[in-house]
Length: 466
Ligand SMILES: NC(=O)C1=CN([C@@H]2O[C@H](COP(=O)(O)OP(=O)(O)OC[C@H]3O[C@@H](n4cnc5c(N)ncnc54)[C@H](OP(=O)(O)O)[C@@H]3O)[C@@H](O)[C@H]2O)C=CC1
Ligand SMILES: O=C(CO)[C@H](O)[C@H](O)COP(=O)(O)O
Image (tube, rainbow, N blue to C red; front, side, top):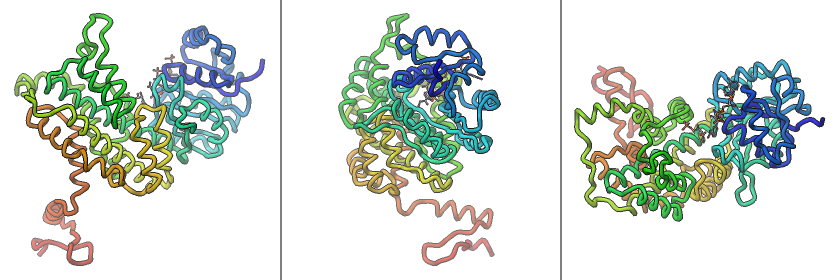
């Protein structure tokens, strides 16, 4: 029997879809899953594609089914499962066999695994698009040795989403660069989703719209500047009915957000990099607060429910404009963080290419990314919010963001991501800020010294120094 061009281990939601995508693009693939029944069911359900798939039931057979030099994709949960599978596979492999961790991973783990690979080829690639993207064309962010990427680029570009005839698959840089970019993608995803949830809250609790009306608003927005996958699915989620009760689906979903950790990795790394990403941090914190359901109920008992009716203080157009401004600000923060990491880690991350690979296939794909790719190509060193196109959009929409945040605050509607986006905007356009007070305080209690506006030097002190 002829050997497969590639192997994939881990036939969960993403692995199964990715394996079918690979087979669909004409590549023979060997597959293995820890639970054998899953492999059997996968092969049984593969239809016509089964002829390209070699299901295997132990690692030895899996490895033997792949042509040398081998390429093996791992699609298992981040952390120990990846280390366990690498440890189990390496003794069965040749030195030039390539292992690709295609799950989400903390890029520090990917850096470590690259070092532990000790010259044996290892790639960490971020794959975005959920199950449907993995099956029909995800966005792919690669990291590791360029030569290893080039070895599999023909497969990765074939299975990736296409935008205007260009594959959304790009090598980002060495070691964990691909997983880093994927983590920032997910941080932006968190902030974008949180901002959408916040305006949903205004429509539901502040304006008294029903789910169908809310769904219609999202549908209309999806034909304008906000057109994006997340707005499209918000329309579908808001319009869906529960199959058990017939009630609007959202009315039966517990308001406690889950998280697998990628947004948290981004927020933590942003702190290490001193990169300001307040909207992303606020979105992570909002998920943490949402999970404290009992505590929130206790708070409502103690303080009373927030006075929520807006009594016509806002209209739908203002919400749309606020979301446009908020979205620009959260992407600007994400790209700024990538630029910072690129310098700190000497990665030379290709910012315009990152915007390009996010234009299709991934969860944060949106029409705005087209213009972001153009703006970053024109000036990769400029914060997106200062680019001609997006500065214009912010000028046009920031007053609506201000109105929405102000009215939400007055009416007790929590708006952590949009309000931190607004604070970022205001801070970033304030040439003379207030950190002079912080520097004075630091010098007072700790002789930390300060710089002056009127003379050179770095170590001046206040009168208390004497
Ligand atoms: N779901 C999504 O939308 C996306 C997920 N990802 C990432 O892709 C990866 C896979 O996610 P997803 O497919 O959703 O996860 P699933 O939970 O659907 O599947 C997990 C898979 O990993 C296997 N597995 C779990 N633990 C181990 C282990 N210790 N050793 C070997 N195999 C193991 C499971 O095998 P078994 O059947 O035996 O349990 C299963 O095949 C994760 O890193 C995730 O973060 C990336 C982008 C989007
Ligand atoms: O990577 C993804 C999308 O891009 C995964 O769906 C990931 O699980 C999303 O993060 P979380 O589970 O924390 O919401």
